[in-house]
Length: 174
Length: 225
Ligand SMILES: Nc1ncnc2c1ncn2[C@@H]1O[C@H](COP(=O)(O)OP(=O)(O)OP(=O)(O)O)[C@@H](O)[C@H]1O
Ligand SMILES: [Mg+2]
Image 1 (cartoon, protein in one colour):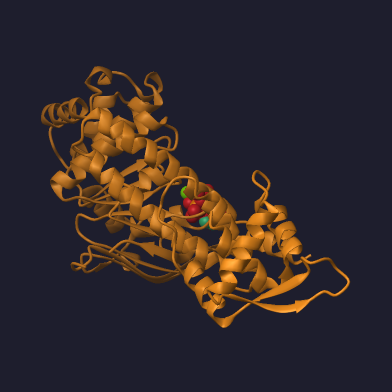
Image 2: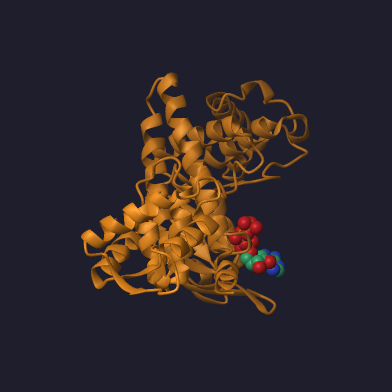
C-alpha cells in the first residue's frame, strides 16, 4: 500500500487539511490500519518538500493543524504515472488496487482501464508460472501453485470489481 | 502472427432481440492455444460455436483454411466438424449409451475405420489419459473427472486441427482440472492442434498462448502476442 500516493490522490479529489485527509483515508482504506496523525503530517511534509503538494490556505478559526494542502501539477503527473502502471503481480495487492480504483473514479480517470491493465499483468504472470510448472519437481510445482492460486484470487477480485464499477462510482459520488 | 487457421471478422448474432455477438473478431493461428474469457453471458460459447461452424452468424465472416464457414451448407459444415475438429464440453460430451472405448472410437468409426482398429486406437488414447480402467464403462458409471478425460481422448483421437473446449474443467476439482489441461495441452502441442478454450478459471486460461476477454459480445481486451 502506498500511503503517500494515496494521500496525494485524495488531495487531487479536493484540497484538504491534515485531519480531513486522515479521516478520508481511514474511511476508505484504513479499516484495518488507520493512519497515525504523525504519519499524515510527516508524509505531507515530504510531499511538500518534493513539490507534489503546496499549502493552499489556512483555516483561521481552527487549531495549528488547519493548514490546507493541494496537489501541484507535478503531483498530478506522479499520480498519472501511478494509475497508468500496473502493480507487479505480487501477493497482498488488494489495498493498493482498491485505492487506485476508488481514486480513479473520484478523479474522473478510467477505472476500467486501470483494472484491465492489472488483469493483463496478472494473466501474463500466471501464464509464465504455469509454463515453469511443466518440467519441475513436485516441491517446486507446489510452490508455483501457491503463487498461482493467489494470483487467481486477485484476478477474480479484479473481475468482480470491474462488474461493479458503475455502482461503486455512483456510491462514491453521493 | 502466422497465417491464421481460423478467423472471425466482425461477427454479429442475435437470439431474438438481444445480441449475443456484437462485432466480435478474432484469429487463431495453427497450433495456438487461445483462451476466451469474460463474464457470464458475454458471448464466449456463442463465439466458440460460430468458430466451430455449429452456429452461423447473422453477419460477419468465419474463415477456416481459406473456406468461408458461414457460407457452407449445413451438411458440409457437419462433415468438416467431423473431419477437422474435436469437441469437449463441460457436461454431456459423451454418448451415454456407449462405453468409454466406443465413445472414443466414434470419430474414427465415422471416418470409416473398422471397429477393431478404431477401438484399439481408442484404448491407446484412454491409457494415455490414464483412464484405461474405465474403457468398458458407460458415461453414467464414471466420475466427472474420468468422463472428462474420456471426452478429451475422443476430441483428440482422430488428430483434429482444432479442439474446441467449452469449460472443460468446469465440473472438476483443481487437481482433476489440472490433469485434464495437462493432457489436453500436452497432446495438442505434440500434434500441432490448435485449441479454442472457454473458461472462467484464470488457472486454466494460463495454459493458453493468448487470452482474449469478451464483454457484451465483442473483444474488450487481448493479453499476449
Ligand atoms: N440458444 C440460445 N437462445 C437464446 N439466447 C441465447 C442462446 N444461446 C445464448 N443466448 C444468449 O446469448 C448471450 C450470450 O450467451 P453465451 O452462451 O454465448 O454466453 P457465455 O459467455 O458463454 O456465458 P456463460 O459463461 O454463462 O456460459 C446470453 O445473453 C444468452 O442468454
Ligand atoms: Mg458459455
